[in-house]
Image (cartoon, rainbow, N blue to C red; front, top):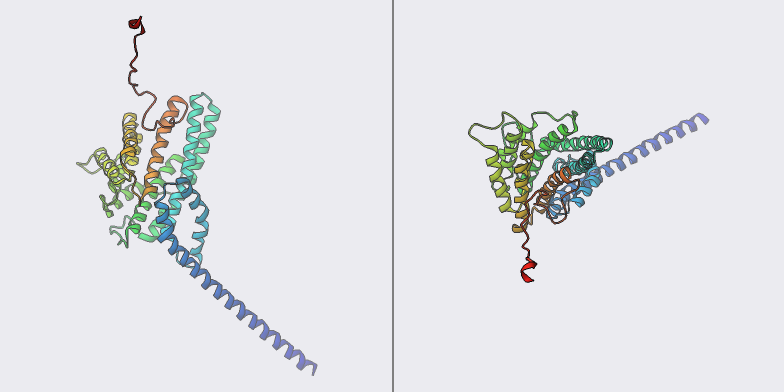
Length: 347
């Protein structure tokens, strides 16, 4: 009898264990379904509303903070639903820009230290600059990899079919991320894993985009590659002529990325006169041409990068950044003579 009771108790325990397992499994399935639904909603909302909303803003610092703060959350939904590759392109491009902004600050600190003949401080700032560029390269590379995952290999020979303008813009953003990844890796003086043919791949992939529709940026990006990478410029082309045209198209559209590409190529050429000319053109355009309301963030990003180039020139030559209200002018500009009155004639 006791054996029978023990057997019955064992069966009840087994049934209870199986029941608990089924309940827990059911809870896990329900939780997974909830997580997946939440992930799908968050991805859809972010792509269709958060990104366009941010692109209409000119608050770069807010965009930087948002990308760094929300990237882990939004990317984690890839564990329970489809990978948010398009969002990742935008998030890592922006987050890479945050790290690059830090690198620029360290670069200015190094330039100020060199201007003051403080070798130790300059060396320390350069080390911090390279560390920040390393972080930027890693983030840009992630954006480039997610670009591949969503759109396919840009060097595969076929252009993707875009669903809408935002889809096309994110494709352009991914190309920028690829080129920035390569540039940051070079600045970091270390290998992060960015393929060295990335610049050429980006240049060819820009042909999938309508140049006029996208403010001359595709051709500007392609011409920048020609100017920076020997052997990539086609016969009969002139990179700097193309960059000048892209700059004008950007001015007319109110999205002045063309100026950035032009300035980057001039920096690579070490042509200070051209760098100053591009910055002056940009400053003048800001006075005369309003930013595109839909792409205000991109235009603000272009201005920020040109201010950074201007700041570097000013620090190297004067020890301080571009003075407030003097963006577009330089320390060695000829000042207009001030008319004076000869008081002796009044005596």
